[in-house]
Image 1: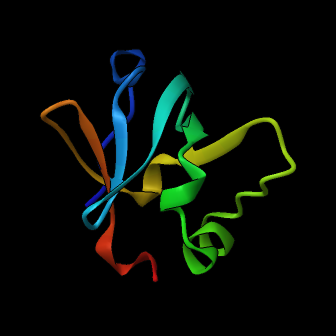
Image 2: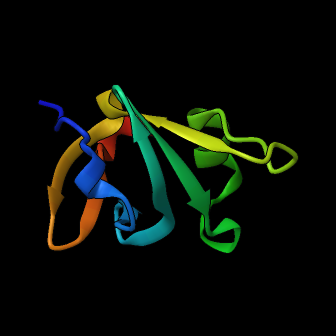
Length: 80
């Protein structure tokens, strides 16, 4: 089950498993814009998310989100 993203998710940490991989900077519809913490985003996860370090904006579809709680947006464990 996925969690719906809202404007109130701006500023929340994006977490995959135990790693904080970025911060939500904007939400539009079912997509969040994320400011990545590249040192916590390993190559396999980056590829699966479709994130490119050369692009200014990284996006995250809410279908990858399982839960939003405690100031964090939690991604599905089965992404990799």
